[in-house]
Image (cartoon, rainbow, N blue to C red):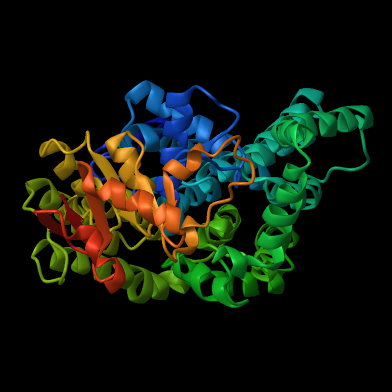
Length: 541
């Protein structure tokens, strides 16, 4: 664990594992499909500053994630692999950064190695790596900002300070002002841990803030200068509503939401956190207390108070929670932590592997898994790692068990997802059916559902019919003309219903969720001679 020469090989192994079968399943609804489709429309339209979703302007998020994703598709094609490619790169950069941050803060190679390995096997991190959202990229920028901050306080060179502010600007361009929250909170603990006294380079700090605002705010300023409507949209709807009125965005969760889910997505090693806190308090270990307070507790309270909650929002807290776990393992004797090793952490991974075994044997209802020798090799390898770790009886192997997740569980999970695309909310099988039956040149009509994944898979516009769906209540105030009404049809309006009637009698495909077409609109499907069931979906053609 103390030989840093293995780090490049460690990262290369993870790179190969992550890229393996990365595009084997289609983009999934809802967030991943939105980001993928917006990026596709940016790439195909050539307009990199005015993002659209299904032909309608979409300004809910800044541009960075769309740009990164579009570049991936420019290189590898418009497909799920191209859309997810830079997520894997971001994951590797994060592993390197958490290692270097831990090493710089604690000057301990074992703690740094433990932190990187535990981080690599954390469920929430892997979720962000396999599912396209802003969060993986935001976390990468935030970690890079903290690393630049540490480097600046060690060297006092203005270049590192400017890098810190530049990366904060990129974080703002990724997810708005919330992107600077954690790096800003980490300024105080980093100064204390590195024993930094006094202030230097005040003019460089001032210029750095200007640089951050120029980079982070450029797109927002551009749009607000273009129209005063954008000011009310960004400040009112995107900032205020997300903080205090998320129920209007269908993202409102109770205060205790993260209290339940955050520990769950950090299992099994989260079980070490309570005793780590107790140990740090008893020893008055200022550095760990500061890391927990500013890297985990304060932002955790902030996100809990915020009305809008999704589990990936708290991804930036993971490096500091994992660092605490790594410190506790390194500073604890084997006889003290073996109870966690045998009865909790080892048991968790054993149950996980048994669950995969049940899935491969077909004992989990609703899931179908095709036979693959590689799946069984990976499962046996996972069991081998687990048995070997139990035999060795060393705390280093308590950490190494975390590699079961990225090296064994994730590759098997990719195969399972590829076999169950409809269940995991991918419409790739529907798109494949449409293309194989030469239906792609017809009008593709989707009833009462926002379905960007289908547009992405088909690489063409689709017609969305609004009846009651919240997600089809699109913000059209920024549209430059009425052309959007061609693609978003409000069936509650007489003229729009007539337009839909004309579409369905033309060569078309009509897609609806089972049981979601009201009786009064059953006439829309009566002239389609064929239908095909896809789990929750029915395709009429």
